[in-house]
Length: 174
Image 1 (cartoon, rainbow, N blue to C red):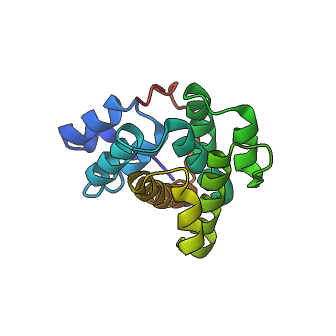
Image 2 (cartoon, one colour):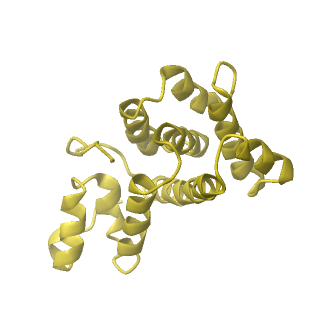
C-alpha cells in the first residue's frame, strides 16, 4: 500500500511523524489521521513511561512481533532490545518462546506474553508467578504493552510496512 502524502496532512500530524524520524510505521499510520495522535501517544507512553524494566518490555515486544510474523517490529525492537541490555540469548528466545537459559524474570515475562497471545488473559497461577518478579503496576504495564503491540503488528502486517526506504531509526527510546 502507498504511504499517504504527508504534505497533505495537518501541520501537527506532519510534525508528529518527523519528530519520530519519519519511520515507515508512523508514515503509514497517517492513513488514520483521526486515530493516529492517540496511537502515537500510547506508543510513546509505553516506551517512555512503562514501569517494566526496559529489557523485559523489549523481550515482550519482540515476542509479540515474532508470533505475529511482523518482521518490521522484530527488526526495530531487536535493535532497541540490544540497546537497553537484553542479551542475545533472550532475543533468540523471543523467536522460539523457549525459556531455557533465561533468568527467572525473563522466563516469566516470556511465558506470560505467550499466555496473553494464546489465551487472551492471565489466570491466577500466571499472575502469581509474575508477581514474584513484578509489581502490580509492572504487571498491568506488561498486559498493556502486549496488547498494544498486537494492534501494531496487525497494522504492520495489514499494510505490509517494511523498512525499505526508511531513514535510520532514532533509537534512544528513553
